[in-house]
Image (cartoon, rainbow over all chains, first blue to last red; front, side):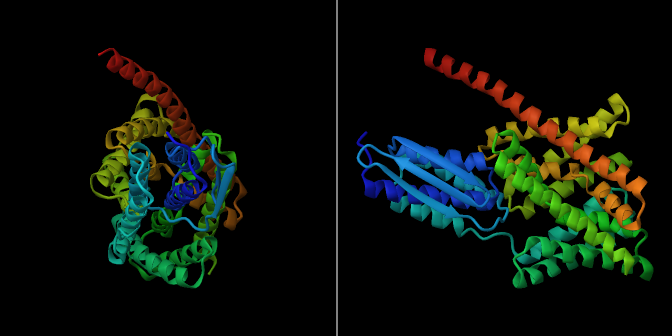
Length: 253
Length: 154
């Protein structure tokens, strides 16, 4: 296979980074992101590829025979869990390695993958209600509690999307949502329809707790991505404590 | 009755989270089955080895991880898709809430009890995921090598 020219290396590295960044945004483990970028660059004939990824940044250097090296970096700011897009991106990167798609093809495929819409807002609101109802019963709540918990779940989704317009700090949003949830559950119990504020809140708390970040952090740690694993782990624990505190603070009001 | 209810709600909860994480179609249903299997293993372990929640949590995450790794290979999608939503019922949200409640109420004794439970449960669940992933990948690499060699001989 002929070696890469500098121009080609820069183009392919750019698309490899696009895919890697999109994967990280969807909630992929760091190992998967690094592996995908390395495989894509190697498939196009790089001599050596060094990738370093943490939650907020990707750095890749490609080495080739006709040029010395080529480096690109990305700053990755936010995370939104999107597992179906992650699956699509994973499939795309496999196909790139197998068929060595042209840059235009990769760009077109990426555009298609990223334009798939998520579930509409109304469905998400319903999911919040169903999840809090399910976990309220799961942890031993009564049927009345289940209904109240579902109603508060709807309120939480509305509050969350409202707060997200004003602030991008997930810790603050979670704390405010949790406090609102705690307040509403206490109100529901004192006004009549709920049995136990604890059962209602436990149903709601499961909505906000970062289960995905927690599971991913464990997998990052054991696959030796210590920095990312620890960062995600601490993030998840701090968030979980903030949420639980938010729910209980409402008991004082 | 309570156990059946828990199994059903674990399944619904896992399905809800799978959809919230934008999983689609068959994969979302398979993720819900993961939540069901994990909690079934938890209840089964408690029947077999007595009421020890930590062993239950370990057994549940072992079961879930084996299921998720198998499904990932069958469906050719990242393991995360099945693992993350299935693990949601195993997150100790209730004891975390109670721990914080006792902390703000100034009940140190109960706070220590509940937070220790939450921590240990999370730890046993993570231990289950780690151990199973390592062992499963090791076994899989042997199987995969075996298959490749057979193909070459043919």
